[in-house]
Image 1 (cartoon, rainbow, N blue to C red):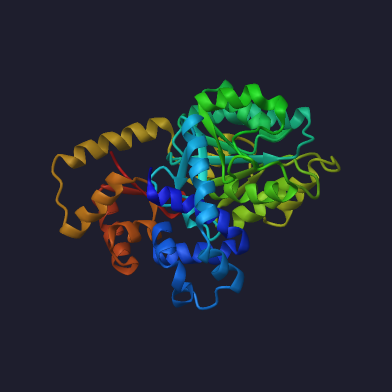
Image 2: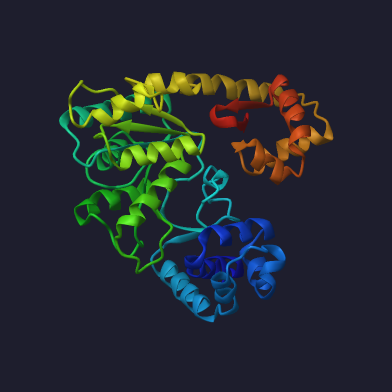
Length: 374
């Protein structure tokens, strides 16, 4: 049994008392194990810790028992618990201040591909919205065949995004608002089963967590946080899709929206968001690819070939090689994560990254991500 995973799950049962403070503790100490080891002296690390949190951390026997039971459930049901220390944890989500300490994942797709798009919208979608999603998935498959599509497995636009992704051979992940021992809504079970084979199901909630309205709102931050771009397809003037777009903007993600007919009730949210400069207008996947500066599959092949030619005669300094080695272990990192993993200060790292780009070793992608050319 992995002690760090056990302790991280235990902390999620303690975090009810103060999730933000506990996450701050984790980030300052660097691991769940360190938090548990320092639990008797929490105010030495976090002077403003609440009395309830301090008291809860004095009594971790019950959370540890629940964590052991959860790990047993995961093992029996082929579920992978992912902590922030795991390479498979969505690296984009690590950039978010309110990222979950633990995620539970059942599936086959990597959560850290080169391109991730979340598609959200109304649960009362129309034929117009369905057609937009269907055409978008078809076109995205042509431009970025390895792109991951993320949504919430809800009625309407969510389930359309998952189904059309599967139909076009794109991996797709559904973020749930409950534990993986259940599925809501139940009628999406067949699609969910297909997603496990080409994508997956992801949640921050342990088994036994039932559907709750607040959980859906919290789920939206994971949908937004693990993506490069958030796309809104049909929304009323108020709705969960707009909440996800707001969260995405707060996370410095790119937000896009498909326009709709003036006066159409489920186009009001999209049109208002575009009007208020909360989202860029797109009409196709090609618009998204252009706006994000993403390379097409043919361009990527050319870039890879250039990378192979470059590697025949590499001339790198020790620090440049350190950056390359870091990206070799975990590619496509934002500069703050790259600085942390390479142990190079951001000020110095910026100059190194510029030099490596000039040498054709790396390429900067949308969202401040750096990609090592293979």
